[in-house]
Length: 421
Ligand SMILES: Cc1ncc(COP(=O)(O)O)c(C=O)c1O
Image (cartoon, rainbow, N blue to C red):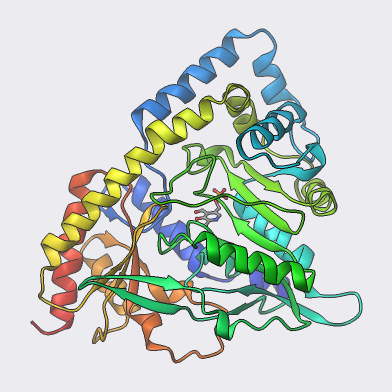
């Protein structure tokens, strides 16, 4: 039957970068075939981390009534009170932020937090205006792109590109082009950035925070890879929060993506609105991640895990991936790697690439290597013709070493073939 969908239905249900990516990821992980999956945001299965989840599940099973509380109860929509109390203490102790329970709301993953926040702040306003979310730097996280429930939700600003040495580069916020009109509802950045591994400098964040404050709008900082957990940051970066800053965190990248646990730290009005949206959309949130993580947050073990296990693991993954890129690509064709300052990806730029990154993605897929073509991450731009968008790709380095190394070798071969060499 040919069912009719609403505009919102079309917006959310038609094929998008994120749905294509999750399809590829799911089929690659479940196909049993030898696919080099360098495409998704799947965190690595780190043995020490998985051992900790197993230990926690055993503790829950051994504790009378704990399993039943976790599985057989609805939590309040704001989140499990014990988990939130533990977070409040952790943030006050670690960063000295003046936060209490009213500043927190748990969501079903960070992704859901963004759906709520964007649609809470932007879109059609009660007075008839339309507001947008400003991305001060793209490429930015593909998962935001299709979240607007009433048409185009984003305005994005292309970055300055700083070339470093022969084969490296870094994006910087182009403050000269940042304009905040009445139609901007909030500024949003991921830090570290998915897809590039960029960490906006403390200076850039301070400047964005000042701009947001002066205009009376929130600065949303997506901390999915940031401090204090999972702390997949390879450089110096000071975490910040203030009443006009909305910080989001997640338990996914520390190793619990299956539990769907996101955390919003915000002004009480925003946190309460997010909790209200959770109850309308899902009644309450998944309890399991909160139950697993609560004692680790209370004891601070989550920090030790982040700093001593998770972070060094990804530092090494990034180092090896960069080494294999240098070895495989040599000087055969022009390429640059974005400075790897955090997150789970390398962002590769092939200046003047004779084919688009979408075509490169197709060719790589035929050879059993999955990456994400770069153009998906450049949404919200007015100048659609910027060639740089089609010259980049994101590759994830979380898989086992031989897979990543072979994937990189094949990427090199296909880029070389694209150059006709
Ligand atoms: C930058 C960024 N934000 C948010 C998310 C959402 O993650 P989750 O919904 O698993 O918390 C991701 C996932 O890859 C991400 O990379």
